[in-house]
Image 1 (cartoon, helix red, strand yellow):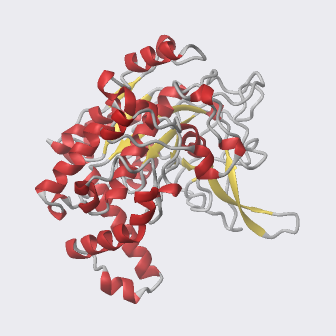
Image 2 (image 1 turned 180 degrees about the vertical axis):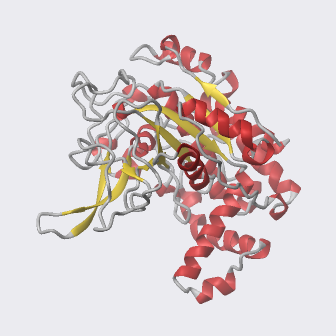
Length: 429
């Protein structure tokens, strides 16, 4: 099934500023983030940290209370942030996690995105935002191959130079982003003043796969902060390599590519990645218990559900989601994480007021040429070389019963922001 990609350009008039709650709600509706029916879930999705009413709980509301999740005073959601997306981002944990507005005011996502004129950063970046296993690797590889230019990543530990160090893109941004494939000479470095946007991988927050709710139910601003963060390798004063959490300045980010995959395929692919980790670590007992098959997937999900059932039922934020049908759904927590992730990703790009291109992974199969061309136009990059072969993978809808598919559809109809539902509803038709 082919799905139309879209450019969601948020104009100045549509942008949320530090205004009244009524203003912010009206303009969030105008931007396509919510309707009257999804208003309660909008407030929850941006991390209000408040259970708004018993009626909303009956509809399946989930919230996130930052102080209880992080234990950090800097991450607390204040009462002034209960409505809207205009709260300041909590600062990162290292000196490079500045999130500083160009006029020196405290971190505010709604400030101008004009880049710091004193920066050595000579070209803007476009995030490649994706829930893991959504097609990130192929999309980055596609752009590198057809343009002949390098891409970047927030995660400097993934690609190291000959000295075992992460290679930062900008001289004045120690916290990232970092070059992908720094040792492959066939990809050129973009030149200062060249046109286009540097595609930069980020998974943001709320994406762990074998963890209790306290690890993944999070506020909008913590999620947004993690869109800028990633670990990298650097040398300490003694010359020893160390892994450091860094962050780049928000003013570097000018655009975003929002990648979406069929949630059923996405969840099963996450299991396949876990299976690869079992193989790599030679966990023979787990390989025997959870073979790479429909039966192995369902057994893995069942045991994972049992493992975290008590924490889920004890979580006041999760209680409204866990009806009997959802409890029986294989890997139900991963479907919730998928849904929450895309809600918060749409809220983040809207709050940053950056143009966003939504790319559905299945469109590589149904309409490869148009999907590639739209992506390159959005990045303002040239189509120079032949693209790499795209091999259509398996779909995994048959891993689920019709009743389970309907359970996921119902969860989305209750909890998805209007923009999320717009870009995922075709998966249930």
